[in-house]
Image (cartoon, rainbow, N blue to C red; front, side, top):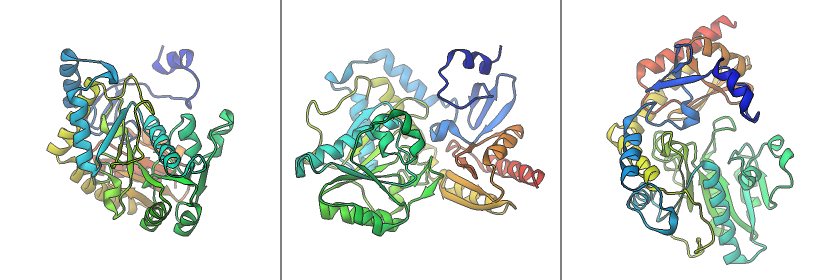
Length: 390
């Protein structure tokens, strides 16, 4: 019995059907249970920063766990403090909170904004402004911050006080922010929404309006952080600096970790405001530190920029491609003929794994270790598929 057959028998049906069962990986390659090799341009949805099987994070996890594994947040531990120091230095922030996922990091961000609002304006200052097309996670607060209405309907009523405005209209965003606004939550590049880069003018308008109304500006960098866009953080591609940044995915390169970084806030969390049992455990934070070390030592931030540019050039030259969006190694390929799911399936047949992020666009987010030959292989495979489909 195949992995697909076994999985369909015992797993909850909350994901679309999965025809492919994977058994091992190495670098940018994965192998299925039949022994077929595939070029992985999804990387666990922008997670596997260092590529499959990189020894650094797992070695650090095992070595740390043999010394001290889990003690909860009742005590300080060296790996968590060292990781907080490192991330704050990279992001220009002063405080860190660790959790286990991107949705949890965004939940913490929502609570931080609400905490700030209550401190500065009372219960009335609670509204959170988000963008159309946003995706911030599937827990209840993060789901309400997310744009897609169909994802919300089965779970209503959801928390109130969220408003969405167009992602490309700075005037609409500025108008939505007022005295009752606790904060603004923005992905600098919307991943699940179709890899749309939010214009700098919108980010500036958010910063100026937040300053004017004493609201917090939070960037959701769960998908874009840790080198993915050719900078350590996507916001570093702009002149706009947020009050807080949510991270996950690439920070652990497969290990479960999320983080919320913030500047020093007089209205920040106080003891008892927020917490998590597993967040910041010694083994996981040691692994995340090893990820940062490897990204730095192997020049992967620069590689993301260079390989992203190479990928964009190759894709734009293909007949049937009408646009290439994104930055670094987070890209969307807009197809003239649509049917992104059909193209993704055909690429699977070519031994290349991509994700149909919308009806007409493919998302490409490979490990940051991808090289030029692999980029060219992917472009050539898409060229064959598009040519065969006319």
